[in-house]
View 1: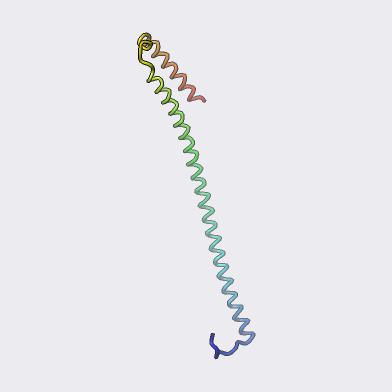
View 2: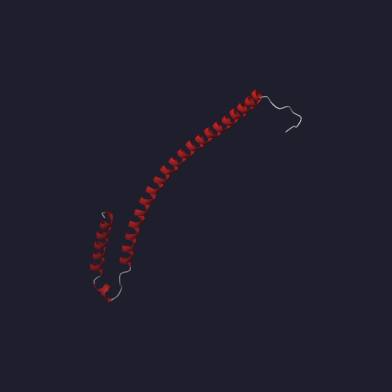
Length: 114
């Protein structure tokens, strides 16, 4: 601020204030517009991410169900393959093998149709 400058007339002061207000208003409106555009972009990105996330979630769920069924089938196969091997197993080898196969087929059918 210059101490030797003359004091502005009221009309000039009013004009200067209006100019500053107009500049400030333009700046604020520009910032508002920029924020609105950014909001639109973010909303679109969120929707896109949510859609992709839902697809991934359903794929993950179906894979989990498939793995669960496979796990049950492997457990059954493991039980059948580790049948006791001794005097009892040696007596009726053919009968035990066919009953194990029948039991396995029943369990697999149960797994397929819960």
